[in-house]
Length: 92
Image (cartoon, rainbow, N blue to C red; front, side, top):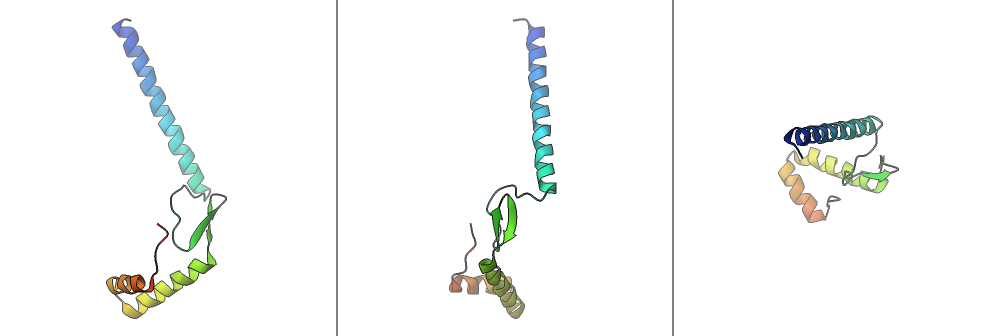
């Protein structure tokens, strides 16, 4: 195969790769704008239902407890120590 033909084929392959990347980025951006959860472990206090974050009432009480303790202690380091002693853990 000639060098010119090889360069043309490589150029088309590079172009297609770039277009595919743009399509994927656009799709992800559109999904985020619709409020869809894009994957990963949901934050504490939320669950994923139909690709959307919904509040978890049981975990919401834990979150309120964490914020109340932080206001009382005014120290994130002390808060983490107390939460570990209480057995409060994240979802991950």
